[in-house]
Image (cartoon, rainbow, N blue to C red; front, side, top):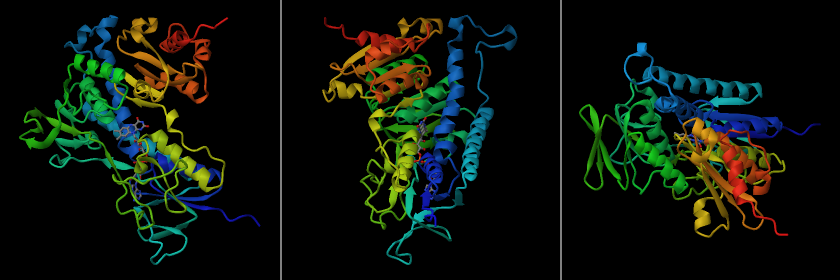
Amino acid sequence: MSEPRARIVIIGGGPGGYEAALVAAQLGARVTVVDRDGLGGACVLTDCVPSKTLIATSGMMAALDEAAALGIRPSASGGGTALATVDAPRLYARVRALARAQSEDVTARLAAEGIEVVSGTGRLADRNGRLAGPLTVEAGDVLLSADAVLVATGAQPRLLPGAEPDGERILTFRQLYDLSELPPELIVVGSGVTGAEFAGAYQALGSQVTLVSSRDRVLPQEDADAATVVEDVFRRRGMTVLSRSRAAAVKRDGDGVAVALEDGRTVLGSHCLLAVGMVPNTDGLGVEEAGITLDGRGFIPVDRVSRTHAPGVYAAGDCTGVQMLASVAAMQGRIAMWHALGEAVRPLNLSHVAATVFTEPEIAMVGVTQRAVTSGEVDAVVGKLPLATNARAKMQGIRDGFVKLFASPRSGRVLGGVVVAPRASELILGVSLAVEQNLSVDQIAHTFAVYPSLSGSITEAARRLMQPQEN
Ligand SMILES: Cc1cc2nc3c(=O)[nH]c(=O)nc-3n(C[C@H](O)[C@H](O)[C@H](O)COP(=O)(O)OP(=O)(O)OC[C@H]3O[C@@H](n4cnc5c(N)ncnc54)[C@H](O)[C@@H]3O)c2cc1C
């Protein structure tokens, strides 16, 4: 007789949940995903996919802004001086349609793998209550028993007391795509990754943007050299960046908004976008009743194979607060299933995660950071090359950006890197490969790059870090 199939129940259908479901199904388990808002999760429906779709349009607008320098001018019949303006209703309709289509793709993929999907809000049933015994998930009237449960419920925008969104003028980034126009004067509160991405995008789309940053510079958590490049570009493109300015309250002011700063100043605009972080969706999930103590900020603590404190209960993605990226959520979910279903598994290694800030230019990074090198925590030599010296960059009119590599002074092994460039998200793969595969700067330097190409700056930076061989 064959073994009974393992039963897996997953709460949440974002990348943490649906990627796990695919792995579990591949391994022969009976899988049910409980999701309340649509497969693909917030990643596909409201956050990552919509924002990157918007940025595809803003990137095109930013390129057009530089077009005159490349010998392009508006055609005589076009009228006006701008090469193009944005059709906001069409843009937002495209963003919403693309997100829906992506969610439908995920739904079809799960159906094709025989994965059951239950629409509704899931929670762990109380083991000490009426369903003592095996793990059980409740989704409305449906009760699902499981050998292992994965919680992948994601997160939602953090709100500031005194700055309640109204969905019209005071907005979270999930409400932007319901607007009927581009905000003429947009105040973005928060200069982390989300705030910086939207501020840059809307400035390029044609809004006049004011970015309110509580810190000395934008993107305070990112590589300081990279953040400085992005902030300089923001200012050059006409954005007002208010550093060391903390928002105390946001109120409607007639047809616009007034943002009161803690130092007594007031900033006026047509709309305000709040981008001040995320809070986990862990309320009412029954996790504490299952024996899991949430951390001080409400996240579910997990180890490197995604186990929680409760036997048989795993967690993945934004609800764990490990690193809020779709790629990390997906990997945590897959690792959970490999572990739960008895496969050999490599624990999550965050030091090899490649990440990008999708501003224009983009910042992509992997491996060790400049902060760790400067503080002495990591012993590394640093090779930095401005893109302005790259032939392809000159041809394309690219003035801003650089390639930076970190390497071990003894072995020459590549430990990490930062690329600031248009499409840096694509260029970083070479550095990621080097970090993951323990390649040395010599090996990168001996690798052919196309001439002319931006990736040539990666091999050139590696050449500069090569040590002369002792005879
Ligand atoms: C504006 C923005 C842009 C981003 N851009 C990027 C990017 O470019 N690249 C990148 O890697 N990451 C990006 N991220 C981060 C990325 O979106 C998240 O890391 C990712 O969505 C996390 O996936 P998840 O599966 O943990 O959660 P989610 O995608 O949030 O999915 C969780 C799902 O669970 C559902 N759910 C919640 N509670 C329950 C319940 N009790 N019962 C049933 N269902 C429930 C939710 O409705 C949702 O469908 C971005 C985030 C934001 C905010």
